[in-house]
Length: 439
Image (cartoon, rainbow, N blue to C red):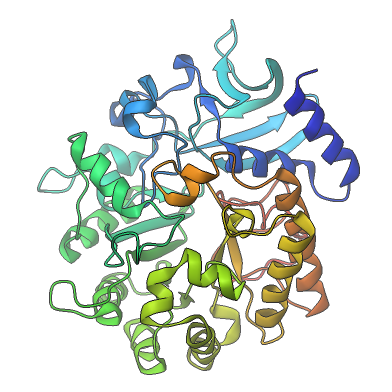
């Protein structure tokens, strides 16, 4: 038995009450997966939906380091089922790591499987190329470039500003590669629009609306880098908000509208609401006061942790507590050089943050940290946080929700193992299936 298999099986036994699907999903998200050439896509000309690199790289290597996976993209996501662990349907965002002990490859019959330490542990499904990806905008741009979909087609991800105005070592969040991801795609000659024109976004959405006949796309997210000055003459609330206004005027009620932005003053948050946004994600990134200052220096400099939290609470007066869903990056709590040294300490700190927000009716969510190698924390922590941390976080998250009588947040699809589609962490996979509510 390989060492990774032994570690995973030990954790499966110790945390048998955590869905086994979530354990494997977290390990794939935190450490990445390798792809055999037989499992790569044919980019936009094939039958498999390729990885769109919708905001961050979410890879454990730069494009030049990924080999053939940089030329023939891997799928956007994979679905795990069956195998010796009898896995229920589990949607996992693809994070490429050529040196991972996990590998996706086709067997002698051409059937894709997930292999751990050389042993097949699950069947692998890949997303079919959606019909709307086969059509281009009038200017020739692809729908995948302007309005990619993730979470098995549930969410349209509109990164309308692909760089961040927190720039350089003294401002950039230490785990974030948004600016490098922009640079690497431009260096590779790929189309990667910095500021997306609102009319292009609307045209792409028209194509999705026309060809998404099963109405799989249910929500859209407007997001991008932080704006400390202006973009196209607009401040942050007006810049992201004017896309929402245009979308809601053109497609009233078609999708749940969400925006990921900084924690803004209450009048700016009200502008989001007035523009038609339904869910607000003012991400708090990491709870610990010292780690926030060290790992989010730009946010500390321009806003400050305490003010950031006050603004999150204030935004509940505008959107309602249930529709304020701040994200944190799960795992950076244990990142060297400043992070906690033990899982116990890290879980205690993060749980403190969960209890703070949930006591106010606000339900955070989290993204599993991928240590991208061009970031300071990725360079210093190539293996990320221990799998045990991620499993225990799922325990703490669910328990805290139960303590405060909260249900799964809206805009993320159905909760529960075998049902969840949220692909960049397992928090929805680990919640009970019966607690599904939407806006």
